Image (tube, rainbow, N blue to C red):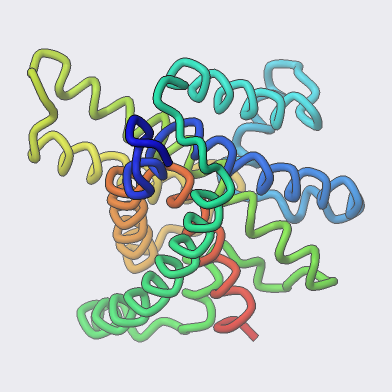
Length: 258
């Protein structure tokens, strides 16, 4: 990179780098669903399913409109903030892939410790079934989806759509709302925004006819995960938050859930 271009650690947080990182993942997800059309609805989860339900209620066909709407949001964000975009796109993209994988593995390790602590602290609810908790917290369908390609495609969706809704729009919006009359974003605003967006992220999974049965255990874990992804978004950028979220779901589905 030239002297007037952001170095890698700043470049990953640039909107244009994030958009270029996320769009190929979105293309894999949507094209993958197209070629597994008989299972497409079963593979949609989280914010993707919510968005499509909302569009259906508005009388809009969600098959193509949902990804088009997401692409418009991402491209609009990238174009508005295009000044100072990094020139070493391949190098930044490769680095973001590596970082996403590392943060996904880190969350997997942390989640094991969090689950153990919650189990011991939640004695009054009885000891939950660890496999059920993994399925819920990792957005995994307990019946599974075959073939393996279908599972991998499904995991990408949660990372893309949920990070767009709860980190890019919700967390980012709360930062601006809570600091609208301040010269700079203070630490308490960052913490409040992270907690509020994580609470919305966790609670949304229990709302509606297709929501999960309420569990304080799972709600607490999802809040922890939401704060983790908010920290990644704030410190390392939207693209890495998406990659880490998708990577974590893949690890849970392929390693921990038989």
